[in-house]
Image (cartoon, rainbow, N blue to C red; front, side, top):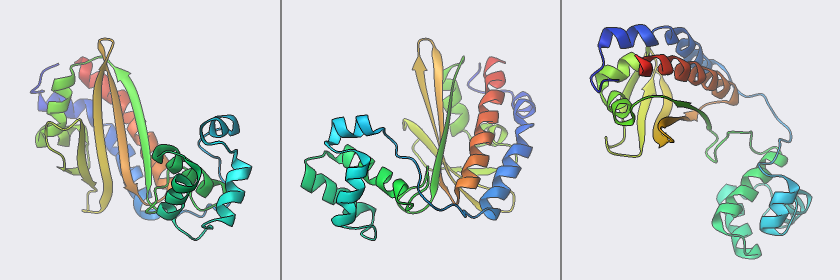
Length: 221
């Protein structure tokens, strides 16, 4: 795997992804969430009780009687942290799951209402070469057929972020690529933020899964 890939070979390997990306881009501008109702918490009753002292039925009752459902994410998390000796990480976990349980937040939904999805895969390849491809405007264009992207992070950052847009300039969120070495292989994680709906998130999750499969072939070339 060369740090300066043959552009024709790279485009050929990744070109089949154009249709999947186009479908996901359409989902980002077409779908709106109609889902309502309770969702599942991030942790089981046993895990949350062990780490916070209460199960989910208790937490829902406590928060409803405390700051209440309209208090907002930050206020609820701060209240949990300050009143129950729960550290910041678990206070966030309690709050996110509470919001899911009472129908205030869907899986993958952030506090600002947008959605984040992730996909990862372990592949053979050269870490620095792949990062160099992602940083290069030309190589990245070949890696992301049919999409436009602008690098938003420093080239040496652990997570390399790009702002993504479609064929007509429509904003498609922010994509972060992380490449870690694991037992002689590469563990690749793609995180896609600022998506408008859970339906769009699922389209992009599928597209990134296909992208990682195609990338495996490009890395092996």
